[in-house]
Length: 164
Ligand SMILES: [Zn+2]
Image (tube, rainbow, N blue to C red; front, top):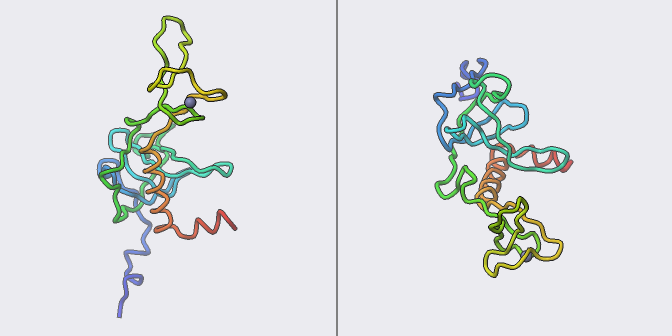
């Protein structure tokens, strides 16, 4: 009796999925420089995934091979059954800038001078002592958490590689 693993098709060299066939918010197994899993962003021809570099892990984008050099570095090899849930944004539209000390929202004050001071939005005070304006993107956090979940599901070996 033939099982799935013995069908001849599995032994053929897998072909990359062309850009035109990639699905917005679809999760792909990637053959790329830095990413092994990524979610597709159609308007950018990009895949966002978790990159590990010098021990830190963060969301990075790489671009579909069909875009050509020098930026096209990703061959998506397999569409996985998960897709990014509707509540999680792919973009940075909802990013906010926060005071690094008190975590309140800050904006750069109106001024004609080049270096207008940053202020807490709620009470218009200057940043806390030693505070800096930090970009904080709740969607990135949500996207990162989701990508980690997918990594654990589809690439359980990577966790032990990192810690071992
Ligand atoms: Zn503050």
